[in-house]
Length: 95
Length: 368
Image (cartoon, rainbow over all chains, first blue to last red):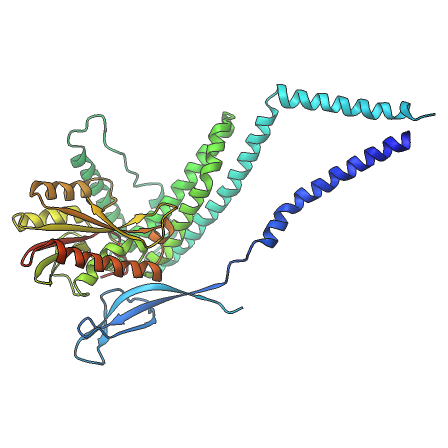
């Protein structure tokens, strides 16, 4: 009788312990199974173009540049090359 | 010996423990106290994150102020963050509230400007504007931290579980807002256009990136171009420093100068998107698209109403982080769509030979 009751108590305690362990493992399991965000590389680029002929190129942003700044003359004509926009371009990094 | 005599004490202990637990959890405030401490612990953790953000923003601000020639930048920041508060005018007597509000906003603005000029006398105006904005951002982060700590300590002092629970539910939004502000320091310091600059960029595209015709009111430029046989005036803040200008006052002055001979006013601005909306969505409607405290918006509405000029609004939807962060490619593509929408509106809704005013509302950092 004692051994039977002791066994029941042990089993109950072990089950409680197992459930506690599982509960503790849930956050870890969730973090492991969650899809990892892809590594992204960011680069600030500027769109430089000629408002007269529409010629446009995208290049790396240079500190001190701003939208509307004249940065040269158009290679296709006499118009001025101005910074038309500055924005962040995102690229997925290779694994 | 069947062992029941040895089992009995265990069962008795279990029963006793159960009774004590039932008493503690059903007839005392212990569960609420435990919950209160759990909530407080959560808020303390987030407060630590907020303090780290503020410290990071301060470090960046110190570095930026150092590069533009401010001596003792830490002292300058310290002298700014807890001062220059703004007391809202009396609201229970609404007569002339807009005039009073406008007066207080201008007074505060000029106090801030004087403070920055004192520490940065020789710098050009666009740099002064950007320094003002960086100081304001650090000030906002300081205020957020102070408010969260205030409610945390208040909740603990009066064992106010509901207050702390509310704070716990609000924390993710507060942290996200603080992150957006903390990250914006980089954009303001480097001079890269931010999402809130969609209005000024649309105006700049419409005038084909030309230089302004004149400064119509302090910190606000006026441009004049022709689009499809229509005379188009564009108003935007003077860049490329961090500045929003006074678009309402500028519009009031321009329409007054033109004697009210304006066929349409189109306002373009960034707007915070709902969670269910896509970033970069471009929508149009009616009204003044501007998110100021009131005086600029009411100036636009009043001048449009007094001359019966139709008032259109074009909005580019984005999150707070996008509005305060550098332009993303997606937002830039939306600017192009908004620009096309403005051109279409001009051609479709204004007769040839007519006059239109475009107001590009928003922060013009990085946009001349």
